[in-house]
Length: 347
Ligand code: SF4
Image (cartoon, rainbow, N blue to C red; front, side, top):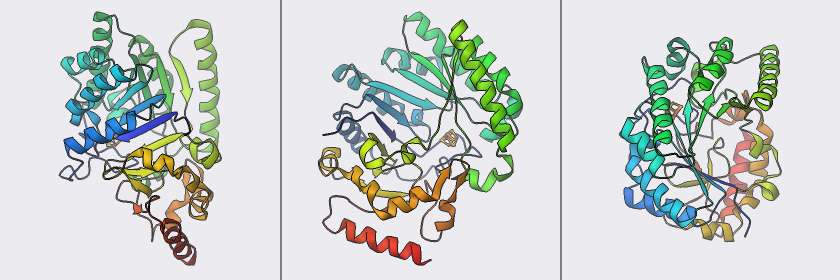
């Protein structure tokens, strides 16, 4: 069986925010019926038993299910000490007690979102007043708690550049240095989910991207010299651009238990509510990347800022609003995918 590098599991689609750029429409319908605690625990344990290098607890806002999340971290780190367990959060509901639990549960890293160096820019993208101050406070709590427990929990930041905040990136990196953040990750804005409706005009142009790239390069050199915060550029499409069936060792599961080849393609190849991930791995479901349906998806996604899946929208749901469901364990799965592909290209 292949070695799995990363598992990312959205343990909820509920969120305390309704950000303008949310790629999976989280926070829109918080009454949505999610996986029961029992099912969630079972899927978390099942996924961890694959022993990936790294396990990311994502959402939505995962802290809305914090009891389940922290129990999993405690158990997972005891059982598989070499597995990194990470969590992403918008920071809004991080109290001192929550920060302490992050440290004492042995979480490996916590990623906060910070999209500017001021309330004006951050709260604009996050679509709510007061969130910037809360995330700053949350980072301070975690830093203080890790100091108190002498913990090596890593704090990272995810920054999404737009025309509104790009002028503040240097200031935001400096602020992170002051807050003892170790890693500052920049991920391009993708025109999917709510960004597709809200942010068309806010994408950086080619010139702005190349200036950004120069700045990040300089920051990387600064880091090598002075050990300041490490700055990194994330290409969210890496897993799509490589030869999926041979190279990919990335498992993505959404908040309904759907098994996806990519978080950005709303086509499921299985579901973990009734089957174990091991059954899918034995079937080597990654080979589905070679199917013409996924090749078509791959050809439609070339750049983060040009998600041309939109052209196929009549038949595909928006990411986070549902999936076209196939199941690699069913004998007629490939025939069903063939038929769906024919329907798509006839459009
Ligand atoms: S981007 Fe993150 S914080 Fe914002 S609505 Fe989506 S899941 Fe919530």
